[in-house]
Length: 392
Image 1 (cartoon, one colour):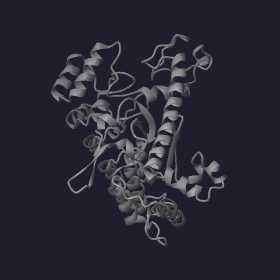
Image 2 (spheres, one colour; image 1 turned 30 degrees about the vertical axis):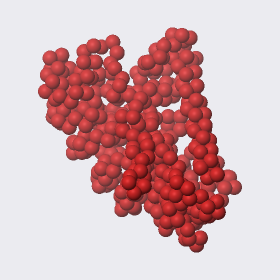
Image 3 (tube, one colour; image 1 turned 45 degrees about the vertical axis):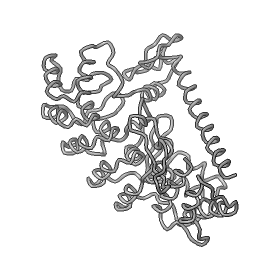
Image 4 (cartoon, one colour; image 1 turned 180 degrees about the vertical axis):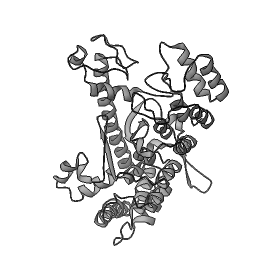
């Protein structure tokens, strides 16, 4: 019975994910029928839309698409690692050279073709942005010494630091920080598609000779590819468990906003929960712990519910007294509803067959005391993540 319920829950969850992806696809496809984002041709409007496109409200193009739609769709399809330079063979060769991380070859090519250090390859993307993304510290340092602007932003409002953070390029982040870039300048990064929950990280589970489960995680190349959404850079670092960069950020004295969210390509950040979109709707519901649940999900800590090994990042956030932690009543309610009640069900059905005994041992360890509670946010997050792993 328990296996059936778990399977049913996974099926329902996948159905909702499928609906979400289908809705996104339909919306983007409908928009692509109007315009070309640089990869798709329009058969109705005959316009080409790229990151350089600006919409005149009085133009013919304005009948088909708004500037906001153009910015959002262009951003979703942009991928610095995969997007070729179109209609400019010289710059495409430079892009490939930058990807090779061969500093001498890159600089010689730029010199031979009279390309200055801040000349964009396309969409405002400079050589330093590419070098920063690929964590090519040697090339990036040379470019900065030659006068490259480390503060410059491309047509997507992304800077070298934003690209370095996107790709967990720790050496680039340190170099840019030492070159005078402040984390306040970053604002947003592109959160690449790939992670919706803990289970997206997991490739498979095997067992050793002692029947201990061993989790095998997907590679970065499998997880992340092709476009993405704008994210507050702190949320990006947390959701992708980029501990080393987060440590640099906090050590620099930067104080993260407590809450953040994004919707339709727009990022909202605030230190006040009531200023985050969606708060009023939650406040007006009858859900007993809705506001505190909303607080957690909108906080820096919320992203850790999607991370398979969040312990070190939680400790780092707590060390720097990062806010957004729900109250003790919420933690008690989560223990009662999601921990103890699950344990009671497990005992009631007496299900200890192979494949479920790991669930039972986990629940016995964390949830057997009716009068207990989660003592702190770390204990709750570790439980929630551990439970998701078992559901996988």
